[in-house]
Image (cartoon, rainbow, N blue to C red; front, side):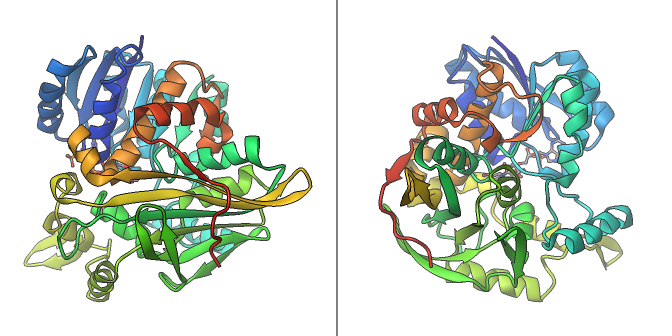
Length: 419
Ligand code: NDP
């Protein structure tokens, strides 16, 4: 029995909400709140006839902490699920602290305005200190650790697939499969085809910022940064086949390096087709990925926001995307004195997701873990106070829930390693 406030009603949130409605015994009441209330109303109308969950809707600008506080005070939820954008992480965390409510999200904080001098000063110091230059990092949210702990509250960060399930896979490997883990390779393969020359499969602005940033990996206690897309490997993915994949910086590397300190190397690879890369390079070269406003015919325009308006809405890709995703982790290390390698992953079919939840597999593979993470908090299976990432919690009940709610794990005892 619980009351949950979900902020955001885009591609990922729609799947999470759909899934919460399948578990009405846990999610007894939901309030869907977002910037555009009409989207929340449409979704609520669609779901109400099929669920026992009591759904209400609200309008909120989550950039404004006071607005979020007012909404939380009026709805009195047990948990706030932030499935809006990473830009809102801190304002929603502040509101949760002010109201004494648990918090969770699916992506770590980054600012909308990367030209803000106050933010830039801290960012540039962090680039020098840590050695990677992505706009997002955990330091902003880890700064809330003591406040959440003292308030007896939990903030669960990055509970999508990657970050999210990939860290639960790491926790599972450490708990059950290895005495010591030496290397972790996280592999994110999207073998889906939507038929457009160029589209992103989650929020275009956040997605393009992420993949156009320099790549980096953790090795022997420090970061190594390399130019974007400069490390390429081929991998033969179960049920997808051979794909090109590229090393990216990714947020879970940062928390895994801190929480599993014995690991010598952690890398993250994502597959991209040539058409995607060519389009992205061209857009970058002409300045369309810039977050700095330009003046155009008397209007101030942020190029990447204008591009977002031109690109297909990721939530609309569902009916036209065919193929499968395969996301998982390959580990090397030791068990009972023997060297060992091991792989755990999930395969998800775009069309099966569309038939079930009306979405493509990227939103599905993010929305289902968000719902399962919320379920862990609401049922008390995950009960650490403070600000935590997924690998810090018991992976067993979470992976069991994912098996039931649509993202079953597969295991390979003798995986091919990535050179
Ligand atoms: P969408 O752009 O589809 O949806 C974002 C939603 O947030 C929209 O409903 C939008 O409202 C709402 N929103 C934006 N700004 C505000 C605001 N200021 N106040 C209130 N609501 C707001 O994004 P996605 O669903 O694709 O992505 C959601 C999150 O999931 C992102 O943080 C993304 O980074 C993360 N993600 C995580 C992954 C993982 O594996 N961990 C993978 C993929 C995504 P409006 O309709 O008005 O625009």
